[in-house]
Image 1: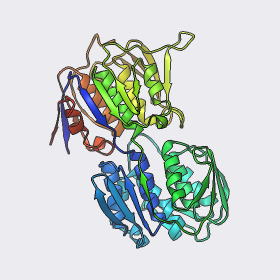
Image 2 (image 1 turned 90 degrees about the vertical axis):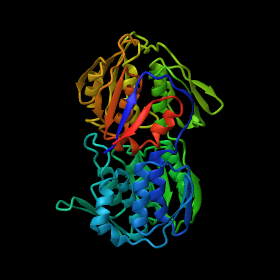
Image 3 (image 1 turned 180 degrees about the vertical axis):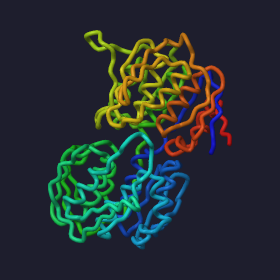
Image 4 (image 1 turned 90 degrees about the horizontal axis):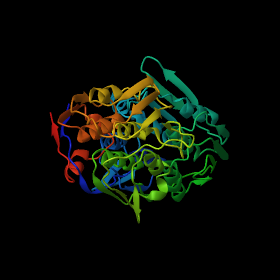
Length: 435
């Protein structure tokens, strides 16, 4: 187990290059199973979750080659499906939430898949019904083994159909798309998630020979094809990292330039942080966050308290709720943070309260933050990272705090952020990785 030792109170200055999008990487790497030909993916982040998925792909028989520092080629012409039933595979998949997206392409190409209940962040119940309901609509049989806590899906003659997803799940949509590409006839997916990462997945599959229309909307139409070819694909910058570094800059009164952020794919993220009073400037495709001594949370037009909540795209991503919350602690004004999707994601606020933040945890989904205008700086403490996004929120708090903080269980942070200590130290932070 490793920890970060952080000396707070440093003002950072410099450029940060945004890593490739973690959530997109997990989808498109799984999608390479749909082709026997080589698929090359660029801008892959060197993070724990993605590396674990690449290791799992190699275990299943995919030929993986590292082409350069952030590019890999995948050739899945000799996949051994039976390895999914081994104990070694079960151990690998249990450590990775993204492993659930192997089911769709495995079902489509090999007509069966077996996977244990996947791992990932402990942020409350994360049901998988949307995934398996879509497989059943296509004609597959789904069963669950309570002894091994694993799912088994079989379906030799998948048929195109109409499906209305019961929630606009990103990974559920991705799995439904990948399971449908070889299904006979036409499949329509309504209430599909339409995040940029789904746009990227569909665009890649279309270049490989799939026939997907309505890309970018919540109604997708898929005409089944018999095979897919190889292609090259480049991941978008990670919009969650963009939002995290906006919060970092504001909290530490830093002068940071985020390089090549792809503004057109950020949606409402810059607007939400602007509502918290943070100045954000656009310069070509870069984002500049200048230092601010005080940033003031807006009120609604009727004078009522600002309310920040998560929602499916194009709403505010739940992965940045923890960042918005920690940023609000040093603002002028108050805000109600409403995390609708996961019932355990706000439980890290007790650590912020120990650091001196004024937060009222109303219930598992809502917290009221009373900003203190920097009149009372946060103080350094020892704490533990409960999940990826809360871990980075705590890191941001520690970097802004007086004194020294230690964050344990930083493997959680490493799952989603590439060499974050080295990158931030290069622009003036003081973070030491210790055992």
